Length: 303
Image 1 (cartoon, rainbow, N blue to C red):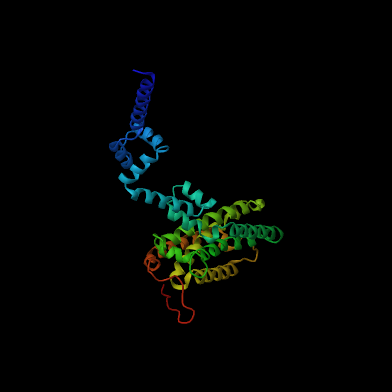
Image 2 (image 1 turned 135 degrees about the vertical axis):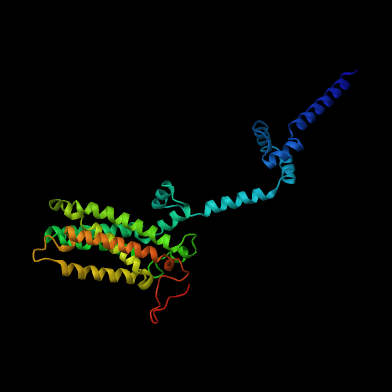
């Protein structure tokens, strides 16, 4: 055999081996189908995955045998994740506490949990403590119970809550949402008021006398909400609190009757009765009607 013939034969064998080598590196049809279905074992899966990155022919075959629906679903999930709003610090804290996603989102949207409102409450307490030190501690004891009352009134209802339309269609009963937001308001205002109480150290535990009034006033306003609405209930209870204070102040106002032991017991009983009434009124909160009244006729507004 001549050298040229030998070289030609050798070149042909090399081309055949190269072709056979290329064929061996392509993913077989059965493995390609299992790869598309997600049933290919890890060692083969990794090999096929690495090969598909550099082989256009196998990618073309994969698109022919694979189901395009999971790919479309994957892109849809990716788009939703990219378009989803970034959770704020309050929502992230609630999610870490194992609060469900939709509940955390609704609570985070509570107006009174925003930084601006919390700063306003803190400033109000600071000014109240200053006045209490300059004048009398009754100033602080009278104002502190009103803060959660205002917070609850600003947390629910079409007139005050910018997210009210979202809460109407949320997978949460109105009564449960109202209680959740009330708990959030009480937690925030109680913590701030407790810190503010430290500004009057000379009066000791008497400065915690605002807690039971705050709880009683909040529950009373919630019990009046189906009849008067969130804002109307808060206004009525706030006026009643002012009248009660005016009627129970003694000639020596260092120990008003409402903050004396007997007054605190009466407030605890009032809070219990208001809670029982609120439980009985639960169906009024879960109706499709809004917790707001028409300005002229006084009838319920329809959604």
